[in-house]
Image (cartoon, rainbow, N blue to C red; front, side, top):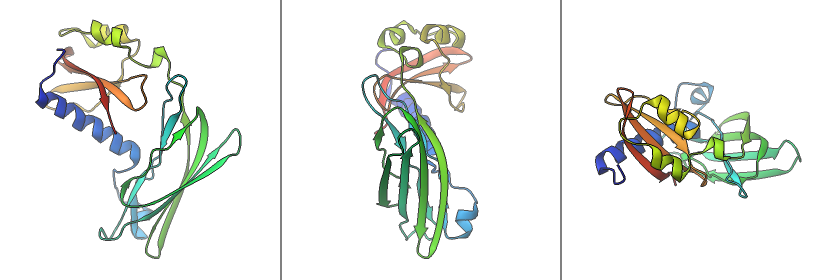
Length: 203
């Protein structure tokens, strides 16, 4: 279990990537933005801050109805405690930048422009402080072994993790590492551990 096979790891990464895409707003659905020429989930998401470091804010993503046109994106991030404002601009479809921000609450106004069409949405996000209770440690990870139940793993780590959609009968639980934007995964089949992966980066 300390050297996972390539195929299961690839599957775990696909599941993780799907979750990240959803957080970035890449799940494109019919919306007012689509009718006006731009398609976007417009989801923004706050990523936890390691102790002594900053966290981050995923600024979302968009795609124009005409896939040959790259959207002009703008995100205005305002710290709700201090009023400090930062503006981010980029021009490409898909996820935008992931700037680092200190722990706190923020208002993010995200806009997309495709030709003469323009869409905008404002959301509030929070960058939380990571703690030992909200992350998985290396020692906790080592105590997880094949055959343990979901309840036993949750008791070992201190929380059940984020449960992904089952794939081929396997349920993957995602656990936050203290390191920024790093995660660990535990796979279950029939409610028992079959594999685990430590420190998977998403960048």
